[in-house]
Image (cartoon, rainbow, N blue to C red):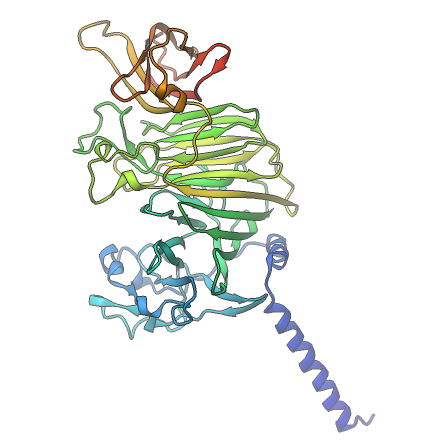
Length: 507
């Protein structure tokens, strides 16, 4: 059979057009495209991505101090020359960062890869310029903007390591982190850490007030698509949307997880030989229940892993807060714990039934993140079926508190001379109404003590030195040694004046 040359050329053109159409389609990215990609990923077996980072660039061969020598050149920031209101800088792999991510710039709905470039980095004393693979990739990125001053670019947010990210508001320094997802946290078989493998950062306009980041997540048990709309300010707000697909059933799926550090504080007693009164990124978990109650759970550094669950339906919010902003509480001019941001999750839409779960892990020092808080849905979908959540994640120094009074301090200990067998608790409350209220015998404390101890006495006093109100009470343990759940709030019947203070005491 004779086939004309013109026909062959025509067939070739059709093939070229088809290939071009496929490439163009691959180049188009929006949330629905990533959602579909996540679904396809979850339907296929998980494959651990191969690392492009040489072994000699990783710990223990390559140390923390060596890795710190490698610095991004600030004059090479992405979008610097264009004079855009947001800029990007990239992180060099090495030390504990053994995985790289694919970074892309979005212009409209079209994706353009951001190639790895060794010339973006000053390698300092390491002198590794000629040894680094030219296609190695970046371990993450940071976003800069004029956060604190109109004539200076400051760090706004960082995405690096597994699904971790964190952000700053004005005047803050980095503290706690967030994650895309938490899987089987503190499970006996080990926790899973899914990874953001690909990012797409939308090129901002000249007058942009916020920046948008898309991400694709992948792990042995789950794949997902994410969108982050980030607006900087005194309250930096990330509007986050995520769609998740399970590959296989999991025991715990933590939505909107927050990770922080609590070494010691005013409720720790004298367990730690440290010159600073307190050392922590966050001092409590705050929850706004769907039913209207506000709850405050002071954080602890337990002697063994402790978990607590707070059942709810359609929660209004939860977060890990740093309420104590007094420098004198920390006395640390380097770490500046008094300027670490709080993080607050504000659900959007119907989150259904579930619980806010708090995990506290023992830590011997301040280098470990030992606190985790997240939302755990009561029912999870079957593998391959989507589960979607949307929320605002606030990063702030001050700004979100219960409408009534709130806890400002928790202290406990024993008297060495009087009723030495009793444990004494001092809980201080403050708030606009309480602060301006003089001595009032009608203000009462409502204290609940769970099994394991007996309430022996209680008092309520106005603190005329700072305007707060102090509840003092003493407990006698029953000798069983089991943890005791405590609750306390102030009321002036028929009005509740404060949030509910919640505490687990281990006699």
